[in-house]
Amino acid sequence: LLELCKNTYGEEHSQTATAYSAVGIIHRNLGEYKNAIEYYNKALEIRKRILDDNHPDLSNSYTNIGIFYMMEMKDYTKALDYLTKGLAIREKIFGSGNASTADSYSKIGLLYRKMGDYSKSLEFHEKALAYREKCLGVDHPSTAISYQNFGSLYRVQGMYDKALEFYDKARTIIEKSFGLNHGRTAILYSNMGLAYNGLGDYDKALNCHMKALEIRKAIHGPDHPQVALSFNNIGRVYRNKKE
Image (cartoon, rainbow, N blue to C red; front, side, top):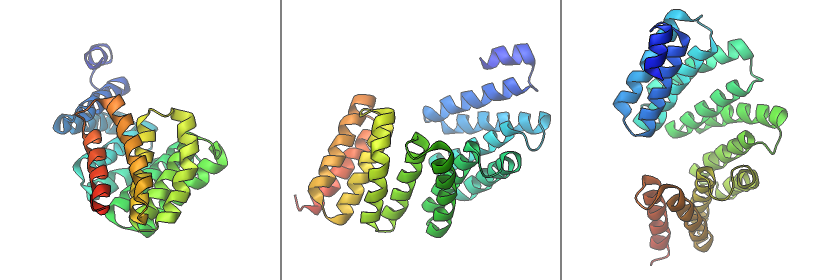
């Protein structure tokens, strides 16, 4: 696809930039992070040269790179810089009442949680949730993701009952939208297991972690990092049970 776009449109074209971005996503999914950021940056540089400073595609590039630095490289300073640039464009184009803007709020809220700035995390998650509940409805998958984000924010602060309240809101929507054998469902069960473990309710914690493990094994096979994460979570619960 990339070579076709380069041959058809040339290097300095929005379709070519999109193709570079797509190849970057593939490299990221393969764990080839050096190649991923190389292609992301090529897409960004083309877009900066040929597009208006407030073009949505430019915002997408900043956002993709920000997510990369947050999730893969754990470089939160660079992640915040890129995600903030992406948000600024989306707010200027769309205002606060838009799905893309809400997505930026959600991503920045997640980043602040990882940075340990829980008040800023809450501020951005509240902005994302306000839009999603009002414009998408309380039964939309994106709204469920906001509920889950709130649950995780409260969980890392040790507020396990409040975390489970939001996880329960998310569970019905996620199971209905994605099914019982989906990666998002596994993540939710895993998070619920962590919350129950924090409460000392080890039987419920094990039940949730076992569900997450079975989903992940079915999706990824036995030798995937997500499967290892579930095994580790189960081991921690047994440790707490003195087994």
